[in-house]
Length: 115
Image 1 (tube, one colour):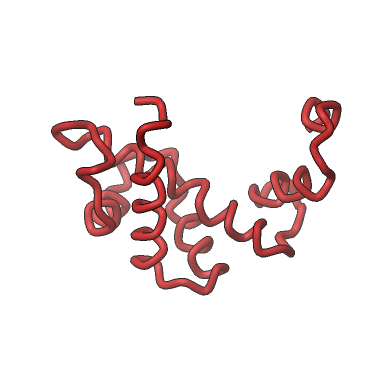
Image 2 (cartoon, rainbow, N blue to C red):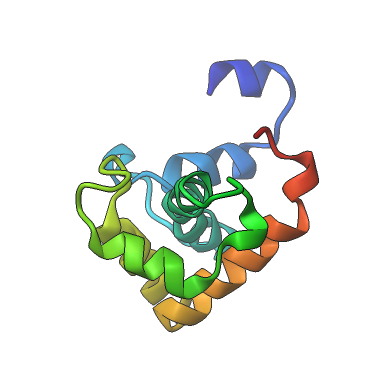
């Protein structure tokens, strides 16, 4: 955090970063806090799902395939399924709808992501 602070990032931004990980003890209070928490682990799961597709492409991913992989505890085992579910709940979104939103958002920026 100190590096970001030295770079001039605003304190509310730094607080949001800290609030996205439950172990920091910083509560989520702002909508952006909830959004960051809800998308962090899920983005990892979506990207891992893309990497096991034949073309290793986000274009091949849909919410159904992510949710199916989510049930497989051995797949992307470092992704907290509990955080994915809790994140959608905290946003007040049904899980499938939230997963679909994140998949489409990542597909929209796929060309700027590292393969």
